Image (cartoon, rainbow, N blue to C red):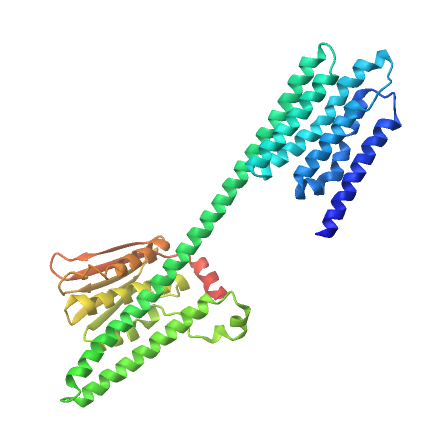
Length: 393
């Protein structure tokens, strides 16, 4: 801070010194020489304009006024020419004024504009001669207004850019929050549903059928372990920006689930009392990670709804690998409702969001013949895109 202050002070003093050298180095030069010659000296104040624009404005006002006021003792033939060209020095004032308007508060900008306008008005009124008085006054006013308008436009553009960045950050935070909510809901809701059902079974048969109760408890243990592993994977994914998490070996964690895990998901659902029939059609192939995970989560949430709300012991899962899209279908012959109401309804919303993020579509609703049907159609990328994505993983 002290170094920049000393630098700004030195540059300001050098600016004043060079303006004085210009004025007294050629005492009989035309005013145009003084006016135009003083403009390059503004480059000495570039740093001060950025850090202390109001102080830079004051210095340029002093310098421009000195260029007009100090030259004296001129011959009559040079007097008119001298004073008219010297007003060009106020262009430096207008440039700094535009920067002040663009970067400072509105109150500071109004004070700066009032000060610059008053000084220029007094100097032009006192030193302009004859017919040049009105001309110089109008030109000075127009340049001042033009610099202020440019400053206002730059201010609005900067404020608009700040607002856009804030909106982008807000949207990114919202999207990430929704992604985490979907992942936690799809992962935990299914597991908790299975645990709840198995715990109820164990509680009912623990005295009469201890072996079945033990099997239910083993299912609860296995499901709980899987859920804990999934939670750990999600938490580590949230910490990927931390270099220590990478050094700790996050690559060795269990990968995210996909359609290859459907049989295991069907077995876990079967232990909860709903037999799942899985049918796969088309040529199976490697899918991008986000597509594979989304398809798995959609099936998982649909099965969770079957276990919790359908009141049936059987459902079908169909996965179709097409040329341009992947279709996922879950059909049951239960009550035909998801039990939407207080505390429910986020599952289907999450499935639609997952499909929408991949530019796909999802339909979910009761079937006319009874039961409930969930169908998702997700576009498949081009083969070369899939290969590149797999290699990147």
